[in-house]
Length: 183
Image 1 (tube, rainbow, N blue to C red):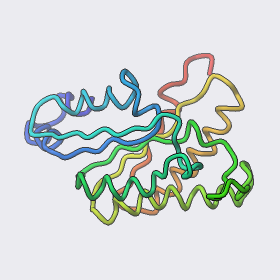
Image 2 (image 1 turned 45 degrees about the horizontal axis):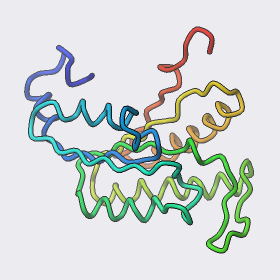
Image 3 (image 1 turned 90 degrees about the vertical axis):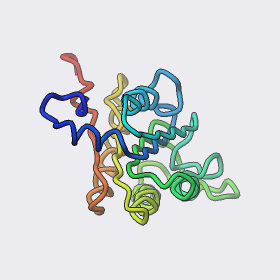
């Protein structure tokens, strides 16, 4: 929407539309018709823009045995050399962490879990920081079920905290934007 604003000059609009974008994440990104495809469509409106969208359904940062996003981020950064990265994870991450052998590593809700999760978020951010890419980490939206919203709020706090450690990382809260009059 920002690029459509009458407040931007044509030069600013041209700059937005002449970047190499990477959009990555879980189901919110991967599913056609979801947030990832909407962002992709908007970015492809003119200019010399390239957009690579990569999402994996049911993935996240807690289960590298299923899909290892920190490793994949390194590969994506190398393969696509993005100027800007849009990231969204977390809907699948409110679960215990296990090691490669399936043994409990960190129980969800503990400080050990939060510390390890923050390290995994940091690994993704560091990868793109080394490439001098701007990272826009989209927070989880408010959820219909209260327990799920509480989990999302905890994850969003980690995302925001880790983004604050990098000059090129920006946390984007969706919470208030997607809250209706009933909460």
